[in-house]
Image (cartoon, rainbow over all chains, first blue to last red; front, side, top):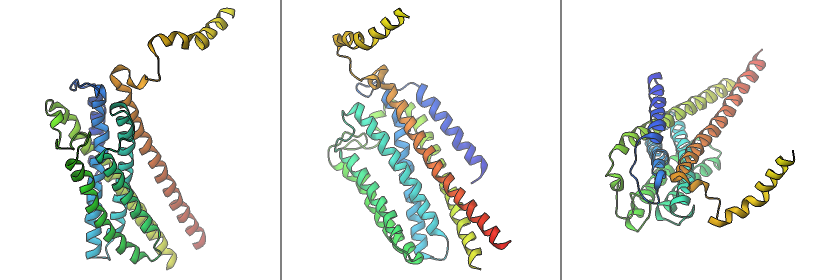
Amino acid sequence: MKTWVKILAICLLLYVHIGGLLFDVPRLNILNETIRALYFHVPMWFGMVLLFAISVYYAVRHLANPYGNFDIKSVECANVGLVFGILGMITGMLWANYTWGSPWHGDPKQNGAAIALLVYLAYFILRGSIQNEEQKARLSAVYNIFAFAAMIPLIFIIPRLTSSMHPGSGGNPGFNMYDLDSNMRLVFYPAVAGWFLIGVWIVLLRVKMRELEEKILDIEHE
Amino acid sequence: MNKFIKTLFAICILGPAYGQNHVEMADNLRAEGKIYVVVTIILIVLAGLIFYLFLLDKKVKKLEKLVSDKKKQTN
């Protein structure tokens, strides 16, 4: 990753934290100031979905060409994506506690997100349970495609078909709720970009580490 | 000193009793337009990522150990 991209990511997040806490936001009942959590909770999920998308891309690349190191990239994207997802889940539960009344509401969006996270946890369990490296990579790449295909409807489609309290679900897609104030987008989109870039940065570090590990082990075998 | 003990007593024993007039609950996160919910959310994200960094750090240390072991073997 180029240094300027890292600096850009850091600057974006500095701007997001300052702007997110100080800029004007719509005054809404019940939500009160917690509307600002939009800048910190939602980018976690956007980051997760984007990283999972890259992960499934590399899984397909691996199936097409098992001799590249696409498997490592695929796993590390899923790994960092899962961390983002877990953070999104915890922050969402806290937010729900003070706006919906309890941390776990059985809301379709919440349940769907939890199932999606479990599906991806199973991905790592699958990887951990196979000894043969080639088999592990191939099977987990196939599973990765199914996991991604399951996550999209779980998070984006099913909550919209039923009634959900989560904004962007239950018949009110996107950010209609916040459309009154498009100023929020000025902070929200940089937040998504900033966190996503940080996620990619961590992925690249982890990929580098895995490649180094393989190199060292290769020397051992020589 | 006596005054200090009296004040302490007042805070410990009488404090909650006074509070009962307006049903004081552990509502601090709901005060000030719930801004502390946002603060907590930011802290959760920060803590989570820092924890993740420590895991990464552990992995790098393992790698370093692997390299130094390797060097000892070749020497």
